[in-house]
Length: 250
Length: 250
DNA sequence: AAATATTTAAACATCTGATGTTTTAATATT
DNA sequence: AATATTAAAACATCAGATGTTTAAATATTT
Image 1 (cartoon, each protein chain N blue to C red):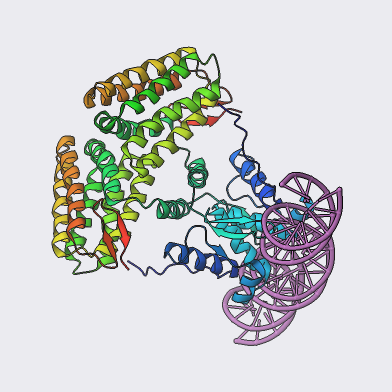
Image 2: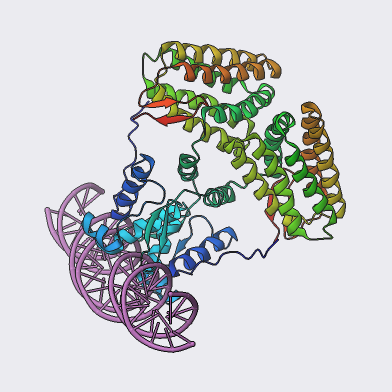
């Protein structure tokens, strides 16, 4: 095997600074809410021009690590990276990977049946009420496409949140979001909506009975139904290939 | 329930431009490798100053959507977002979420046993050879901590790659990377290493026999062993709390 | 005294234009 | 033909001027 030196990228001042600050955050030296010096002061401190420092700030802001506020008593503040930042990053990534519907379904079948198994043991009366209200709202909604999507996301999100596992939450939520984008394209019909409600009801019934196996089974069935429904429905500006891959139809 | 208008953020020129370009990419108008106009020209086109445009480019570069090259016939080129960009983003996110070892283990037990089930059916002789060589290399390595980590990642990565599911690959690889960071801290010993090798061998044996259930069982056992091993080992600068949460020990 | 309006100052946002550095292609030299 | 030099395009950095936002301090009015 040959050498394995890492590629060296020409150092850019802004990158250097952004890296330093990011490391300080990851090392715990800078904490949430803490304020960095003003552009002028910090540029001076680093011995660089304001523009270079501004670019570093912009990059850190793009990472979601910084919030920059204008005005008096404004400035750059360390911020907890929020979910939307990661999701945007994942959207960017998956755009080029272009996973197929099959891939989304597959990982869902891995995770979500197991999620409801845990839920069946831990779920509280209040959480069951939340889920039941969610289904009710979905049924009563005449045709609100987007609203339905929100309710659908909320249903599945609630379930993962019950597990208390932040990683699983992120994964499931990201997949849900990606699927919504696909759904918007494939124009799922009223039958689809009814099917979703029925499936959700069965899942909740199993959870109410604290029956892990039944819940798991109902969820697995549901995920498969959703895939089938989406593959069967007519597509708008996109087409679904034999692999369940979505492609622009132009 | 009250109104639900979204918060409006003061528009910044650089942000506006970055958003426009990002959308053009996500709409398929700009393709990989395509070159954007030079700073000067594009700034002119938008009717803004060079600095504003540069900040937009910096942000897009941070997203991993742009590669900027200096020199003649340099410029800004649309780039496929690579894995490391997403991983960095996830590292930033999880730093604040600070998931516990338990959470990592849990999602692994959801995914990886099912992964090897698929592998047991699809795996080829060449892939088995790869895995066997990987184990051999791991055994022969006297003490190379980091190298072992690389081999460990490569082993698990190979398995998910066999499934051909890009989403699962990303999830598993991200978790592996996060775990390595934890392992570096907890100073796993020689016994741990031997255990890993033995477990990997059992998994490969099951795959060789094309036995999905055995493979799944071996993987589940392995993941649990790794968690136990890490919880038992002495910690360096970090301590593991009762929840399996890592905290800096200072 | 309280409420309202005005002023002020700190900090970011943007612009302009000059100068430096990198990189590749064209040209000249050996 | 190989090597060295030069030129040009594009990014990188800098300096400093001007505009805009925002919150706090101050002044004014009720």
